Length: 328
Image (cartoon, rainbow, N blue to C red; front, side, top):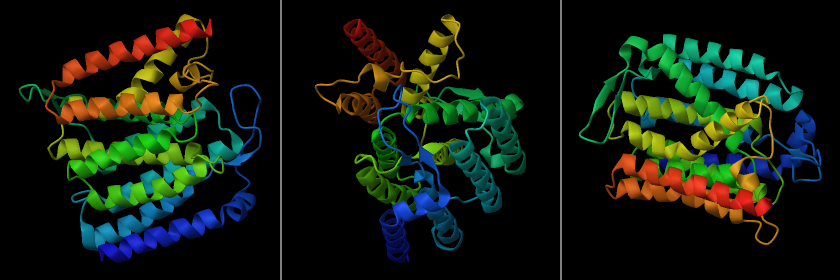
């Protein structure tokens, strides 16, 4: 049955990407160049999330009857919450929704997801150091909403240059395979990502908000479920997986507020912008990939999670300072 599932996934991806131009013209969802922040000079389809959402629906069907990886969760809640996030992304890509409206919609969806599926509420945080535990049950709903809101936004902001989000996701889901978590889900995502990266690196397609919002939300739900079921994953380990997008977003927000700017208004101050080089165009991808991969490897080798986070922060801010000085 697994072979049949993967064959269908591959066929779906082939059909989607071979008909990319037709689908793009039908939906008319493009990222237009602005000759300021954006590097591309022609309109590019931003419908990458569509194939991942279609694959996800197929996965839910197979998981319900065969894989049983989402054991204990409501497929109804997962499907409709994911669909809602995906549709917000579609409408945002097409009509450029107001940030406040999006934020309110996110909070509403997160709230009802947690209310209807209690297993998706963060009830405790177990750290790798002596398995120190923080009980969050008394404020789990608000804490979970805040975590979801921050990660979904951080992930969306991280989707800034071709290849970056795809490589990040391949690393993350490869790690889930290494941990023996959600094997079938992780494998189909990696298969789809390889198709996506081929076209994305050629500048033929973007994830769009429909892709980044949907995948980040789905990944966050998986991690919360894993944490709640105590499936061999720690709170500091989760933070390390999500660290680069999260830290980069936090720095941007702090700098924008300090400079009396709108924290939600896009600029050219992301790490990938700062690392942008005329001599080696893949420098941002290389540095970002190392900043994601090396902390994960270090944690897998048993190095203290707190030390990894401190070392990461030192390296991250050193890279920022050095490259900002070069720009001056």
